[in-house]
Amino acid sequence: MNFIAYKARKESIRFEKKGRPSDIKIGILMPMPYSAAVNSLFFQTAYEYINRLEGAVAYRYVYDIKNDVLEALDTEMNINNLDAIFISLSFELDYVIITRILDKLGLLHKYKGYRKPILIAGGIAVTSNPLPLSSIVDAVVIGEVDDVLKDLVYVMGEDKPLNYLDNFNFISTLPIRNKVRRHFIRDLNQALHSINQFFAIDEEPVYGYGMRIEVSRGCPYLCAFCMEGHVQYPFRYRGIEGLWKIIERGLENNVVKRVIFYSLSLFSVPFMDVLLKKLKENSIEASFPSLRVEYITKERLELIRELGQRILTLAPETLVKSMACSIGKCYDIEHLENVIRGCFQYKFERVKLYLITGFPKLDLNEEINEFKRFLTKLSWIRRLRFLRIVLNPLIPKPWTPYQFLPPVAILNLVENINKYYKVAREFNFVRIEPYNYEWAFAQAVVAQGNEKTSEFIIEWSRYGFSLKGFYRVFKSIDRESVKFIYTGWSEPPWCEAIDMGLPQNYFKMRYKYLIS
Image (cartoon, rainbow, N blue to C red; front, side, top):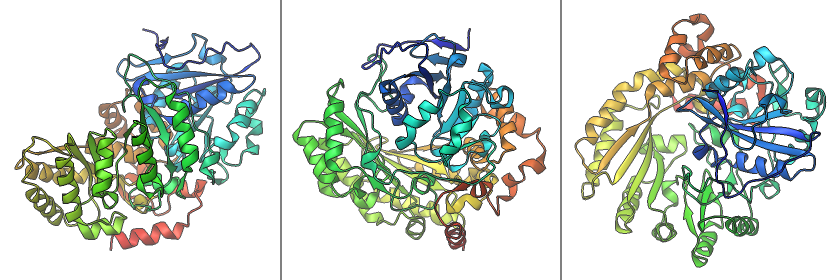
C-alpha cells in the first residue's frame, strides 16, 4: 500500500479552486484522522482563507493512524510540488506522528534541508516548546498567526522564502539561535474565523455536526497545571455582535442548527448568558466544553440542558479543597454535589468529571478519603455509570509552575490510580477512565524535551506510534542525554528559547509555594 493516497470525501463545503501553475501551493497537514481534524479551527480557517487569496491554493492532508496512510483530500498532485506545508500541532505526542509522516515522505528537515516544500509548524504545543522539532521541521511559529497569514503565504512563493522570515519576529528557523517572542492578537475581534466549515456528510466529526465557534482565547485563572492557559495568556474574547454574525453566516451552510463552543473558561465571558438565551430563542442547539464548577447555577444548568446538551463536563481537578484553591480551582464541594443533583433532575444522560492525581505534597490517603466521602454523599444516584470520572496523572508541562517536576514522577502514580479504582468499585453509579500513566510519561518526555530529544523522536516514530516503540528507543539511549527525565530542569531550555511575556520568577515562586 502506498503511504500517501488521494481520498476525497462528500463534503458540505469544498473549494474547487483549480488555480494556475504559477499559484503558490500551500499544504495544510493535520497529524490525525479526518473526523478529528475537522474540529481544528486552524484547519478550517487556513483552508478557507488561503483559498480566497489571489494567486494561492490550499490543499488538505490528514493521517489515518490505524492504516498508517496520509490522505490527500483535494488533489493527487505530488506533495513535493508544494511550496510549503503548514503543520498544526496541539499536543506533544503529535510530534511523533508528524515525524513518522515526514520521514516516510522523505521530507524530514534533517535530510531535505531547506529546499521546498518549506515545513512550518505551529500550535499550542509548538509555542510552548519547539525544541524537540529541531531536526524535524524547517521553521516554527511561536504564538498566533492570524494577522500575518496572508504575508506568510505570499513569502512562501519566493525562491528562497526562509530568507524573508526575519520579517516575522515570532517565526524562527530551527534550531533556534535567538530568543523568539510569542505573538498574539490583542483584539480577538480582529482574528480570523472560518465561516464555511467543511465536514463529510457521511462521516460524523468527533464532536458531532455543528458550527465550531471560538468564543475566547486564554484564561483568566492561570491554573497551575494548565499549559494552554499560560501559553495563550491574556484572556481575550470576541464581542457578542461579531460572534452572532459568525454563527448566523456559518449555520447557513450547516446540516444542523447547532454550535460547538471553544473556550477555556466559557462563563468568564460576561455576555454568555445573553448569547445562550438568544440561541434558545432562535432554536439553535449548543455543545459546551468542560466548565468550571463555581460558574454553574440552577438557571444556567437548565438553559444548558434546553440547548440540547446531554452530558455535562466539569473540571474540578481535585476534591481536596485546599489543593483546589492552590492550583486555581477554588470551589465549594457541596456546590459540586448540588450541580450533580441538578443534572440528575434535569435528565442529563451523565456527568463527566476531570480529576488529576499526583500533585506534590498532597497526601494520597487524604486524596482517596475525600474521593470516597464525595461518592458516599452521591449514593442517592440510582443510575448505572451516571458519573464518569476521567482520571489524569499530573503531567509537568512547560510554562506552568509544575514545569520543574521530572517526568519520571508520573511512573510512581500507579498506586494512586489503583486506589481510585478500588473505591469506585463500591459504587455502581461511577465509572473511572484513567489516562494511561505510561502514555502520560511519554508525553512529558516529549513536552520537556530539548534539541537532543529530536533524534529520540525520529527513532521512536520509525517503530510506529506505540508505547512499545517508545520504550525500545528509551532503553537504548544514553541516560546522560535524557538526565532531565529523572531530575527535572532547574533552568528549562524552552525559557531560554522563547519569550512568553510572563516573568520567570512567577513560575519559580509559585512552584515553591505549591510544593511547600
